[in-house]
Image (cartoon, rainbow, N blue to C red; front, side, top):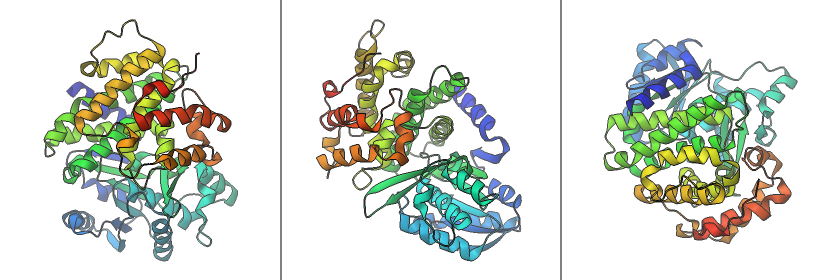
Length: 428
C-alpha cells in the first residue's frame, strides 16, 4: 500500500508543485506562502471552542514570521450559506487585505472563494447569481479588465471536499434548500496547506463523510472522462489510486480514528479526488446532492447515489468497471469474468453497497429521516437548470434537460427503495 501513497504524493506534487504543502507536520508552511504576497493578511478561522488550540497555533506561526494579522473573523456555517458569503465579502471589502488566509474545511474555504469573487469583482451590488455556472468569473474578469482576486491561502483541516486545491465553490440558499456551484480556474487558491494531522480532530461522522466525498470525486471523474482524451491515463491513475486508498484504509480508520498513518492515506486520497474533479468534474450523484442539504451531508448522499448511477452508466463504462472490480474484490463473491454491461454494473453496485454497510453508511434514501418524494421532484427540476448543465454533460451517458425525467427519475426511485431493477439502461 505504501507504493500507492508514494504514487499519490508524486501526482499531487506534479499538480500544484510548490504552491501546495501537504503531508505530516507541514502547518508551518503557511507563513512562507503568505510572505509571497506581503507581511499583512486577513485571517479567517473558526472562533468556536473546539478550534482554540488551532487558532493559537496558526496565530503563532504567522506572528513568529513577522506577519501582521490585520483582521480576523470566523468561518462560515456548514454548506456555505449565502448570507455568510455576503457578510464575509463585506468584511473583505472593509479590510482590503494584501492576502487572505482561510483555515477550515470545505464550507469555510468555499465561502472565502465566493466572498473573494464578490469583494474583488462586484463590491457594490454583490450579485452572486451572475457567477454561478462554468467560467463566469473569468468571463467577467475579462470584460471588466480585473486582473486578479485577492491572493487566497487555503489551509485545509478536513479530508473531503478538496476545496483548497480545486476550481469549485458551492453556495447554498438556505431559504430554498438549493445549493449552486461556481466553477472557474480563477477560484483555485493561490497557495494551499494541508497538514493531515489536523484531521485527527475529525469525529467519526465527519471522517466518513469526507472520505466518501473524496471517493465520489474520484469515481465520478473516472466515470465521466472520455477514454480518447490525451490525458486519460493520468486521470485514470489519479482516480483509481484515490479509490483504492479509500476502500483499503477507511474501514481500519473507522476502528482507530487516532491512527496518523491512516489519516495521512485518507487525506492524500481525498486530495487526489480534488485533483480529479479539477481536471474533469463530477456528474450524477453530485448534481443531485445539492437538493438534499437539509437532511443529508454531502458525502453521505453521494455515497448513497453512486451505486445506482453505476448501474445507469454501466453500458458506457464496462472497461472502467472491470478495473474498479479489482479494488472491490473482497466485496464480490461471484465470478465476473464473463459479465458485462448492466449485469457487471449491478455486481459492482452491490459491492459498493456492501462497503457502505461495512463502514456504517446508509444505502438507500428511504433510510434517511425526513426523506420524502418531494426531494426526488426537487432533484429532477434542479437538474434541468442551465447553471448545472455541466454535470449532465459530464455523465458517461450525457443527458439533455428533456431526458432527465425519463432516465434520472428511475435512478432516484431505485435509490429510494434499493431496487436496481428500477433503473433504465441504454444499449450502446
